[in-house]
Image (cartoon, rainbow, N blue to C red):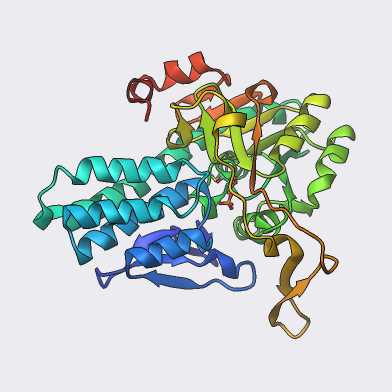
Length: 368
Ligand code: MRU
């Protein structure tokens, strides 16, 4: 990704060799701040407090968290302790389990004196693979955008609605849902993005809008409830969202509000696509509604809101009547029957068990 003309990933090993650097996403969109993670506790805190968020980046941060732990103490005991501490940070994104499972399985086979280096190499591989996967998703997804563009008048944009942030900032680079958008835009296909603000944490308004702006992609931020209305008026050509966990049967768990967009898309014959990197598939699950753990976050995310004041300072205010209960389920499940296609690194798949198993046979074998 390009920030003010400079290339960044969202996470990278620091030059001092003893820490890992991240872009602190709790500061967006007002500040671009880089933070150092020095210990596994720092990594766990960064995931739990959403300095890093988005399923693929959570997995990459966990892999670097293990590397920080192994640098401090490469014993078997500490390896298991680090993995179990990191696993507790957030429940829904399966990439966390995937990355930790991969780290544990590979590092137990490495002698303790080699573990710190091996863990660092593994984390770097997770990051490089994430970028390759997202670029492949971008290539496949761009063809869908191009096909819609071919039905339009010359110069008329393809209107794409997205929810939450499944962009650069949710991954190591490119994003999942945004990769087709960036590639289409770079390839000269006119696109315009409807950005759901994504209450309560505003990942759309704070993160997706910021990065689309950095890349020069035309976009409009709308409140979460506007999508259905825009679809009824023919102002949305396709929806592309990300996912935190997708079952072997194609049920898609993503940021709260995604399901309502899928319902509105179905009612209005708008194609609803999910950008799905394979580490986000949970082949051990078949029923998304019953089996995927949904994170319940603190009520203050709903009852309070942060923003920039006219003097440039950032402050938080209360926005709910005193004494009212608040609820904050952070994700919902869109059943496979509402999904038009899953844009994976191996092509656009139908959302069903056979298509996923045929595309990723090596994952089905291990159910991991
Ligand atoms: O709570 P968040 O911000 O971590 O939720 C992120 C999302 O729901 C994204 O859409 C999802 O992780 C896909 S990211 C490529």
